[in-house]
Length: 272
Ligand code: BV8
Ligand code: ZN
Image (cartoon, rainbow, N blue to C red; front, top):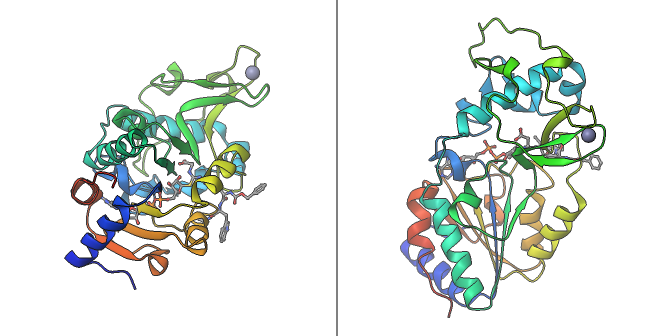
């Protein structure tokens, strides 16, 4: 069972200090204190939908305008979000380990760019990026921070279930120079993660001394599976969360609390 006491913190920090290879896995909880709604808490609902209902190829095939209205709403809601102390503590730890010649990888399930804004370098966006779009015809991926995504979506996206949703025509959707429709460059439920990301994540877990799991319910696979894989490799694992996640039982330490409060204290460590 994970240790959570003061002795647990000292034990964790001594293991961290002597580690040569660190991997961090983050989820929506690391961005919660930046004001970005998590998936499975109250904020996880939009109109009468759960995120899973709209983050899927089936929803896109059925009504791409509704899916874009959902992502346009999330882009608008998060465009002014700033990194919080949790993002910054992770970026600082990485900088220290890189300077000392150690190995550090950040695996994030989040599609926001707050880790980048906080200065993290070695980031694997397992589930893609809300600030990139991909052409369904030619496959080109491009950065896109247009708000609204197209003029037709101006003022749309109210999460109020009573909101009289309008139908968006194909011409209202963003298009590629090749004429194809642009979709959010994110991994939807039922879609495979990019193999380069799966390979990077497996590399990050292999031979990793310490893994930090921050702000994830750990119910989504294959991301959550990297924690149990690390455990099988003999990695020491710490969880930072306001409640125990689905992988809490394989963690050696559980630091209960908000990531923005806990990480600056826990990670204020120099490599041995
Ligand atoms: C795939 C991008 C196969 C889109 C996302 C049954 C069993 C196992 C698996 C499955 C199954 N049925 C279906 C599956 C597969 C499915 C899956 O895992 N489903 C789950 C729901 C059961 N997985 C997939 O479909 C994946 N693909 O399997 O493909 C395949 C293979 C080959 C060929 C074809 C197909 C794709 C999964 C990726 C889906 N895309 N996001 C978008 O964002 O719109 S996942 C989505 O959930 C987000 O990325 C999010 O990050 C992720 C996980 O959620 P969390 O980040 O953990 O967020 P959550 O709200 O759940 O939790 C927040 C946590 O933070 C909580 O623990 C809370 O306590 C904590 N917290 C809150 N505040 C704070 C805090 N902690 C600290 N401080 C705070 N302040
Ligand atoms: Zn194209």
